[in-house]
Length: 335
Image: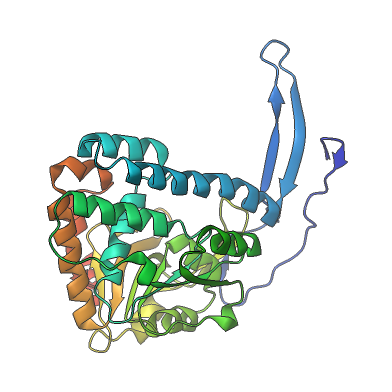
């Protein structure tokens, strides 16, 4: 392929052998990023640059995540001059994911209930959650939340990302924080504190059940979402072109012990019957930490009041309803 005077080759084809797993990625798929122009009058398209794979991901996501980061910084400066409704409108217009504020508020609640102020994020990219949580913290103070909230400068931030580009930028952008990153799974140091991950990141990184168990067991509280396969573990390629693994729900239930470390599931969890998966959002960890998190997060939303209602993409009843994991699965009546 010709792009901007350069010849760009597609990714080479190749067979993938995964034992005992359902495999939907029948052909090689790769990510790409294209930049150019289109003439409205002539209908002519010119491509000035074209990137693939990790470089395409890095270049595109840098713009997306840095826009979120800058938006949080700018709106934090304007908290005292805008109404809660105006802040909500401005944030929702600028942040890529509608769930971003709600998840940052959950992260803030989590770091405030653990004994060790360490925050580990799986797939931190630019570590923009620091700015997002800072916005949440300032907004709670503006809404006269009475209890102490840990200063983010006192938190030990640790991140894992496969992109060395993002790992480097995260440190450059947060020189006033205690922050470390790595792109090597074997070098992860999760000891106490909070571990956070979005489901898509775990799909990329976790290939076996023992990986999920090990990741969550070393912290006081794991906050994450995940989609389990309702059957055998499933391997497939998603929109980014990368392969991901959906671990088996039955396999997870075989190792899960609610008496040792309970897993509380949020009310927005649901079954995807078409894809034969179950989506779970929840907290997993020490029993006292889980319940303290649920209570503190509720206090945060109560303090923010109706003016910030739109900053949650799920309804209040779903957001504040929690069920122990095995009880939740029992209610689904999957068998």
